[in-house]
Length: 155
Image (cartoon, rainbow, N blue to C red; front, side):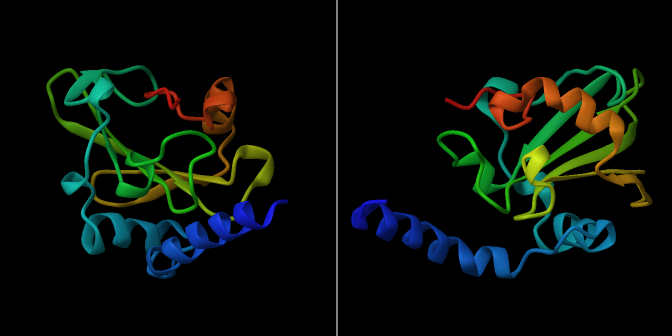
């Protein structure tokens, strides 16, 4: 690797270190606390091509709203940086929140699956399933070339 490329990569790692140091590991309860209390996800941005409430698909609900933390929102391409966090609210046809699902990029967690940690929560915060659920991994595997993200195309 060229010295300039090494310095650039080191700079990115050092710039992300304070943010990553404040984020939880692959722990569903610590993650829930992080994105609901420490960094409330509903204050994050949304992808311009998937903003607001959109029609959803099973298992997420009749309608969904996707929120993306600044790390993932500002990414210019794939793979997404460590600490990327994508939260999807799932609603039924009556507009009631029924589930909250999360993709969280944890360095070294699951290299074969893009290092994504998945979790599904009830609106009250009860986790299950989480980790590497077969349904999440199987469905999102179709988007492996886009780092397993299905709701937005990174360029």
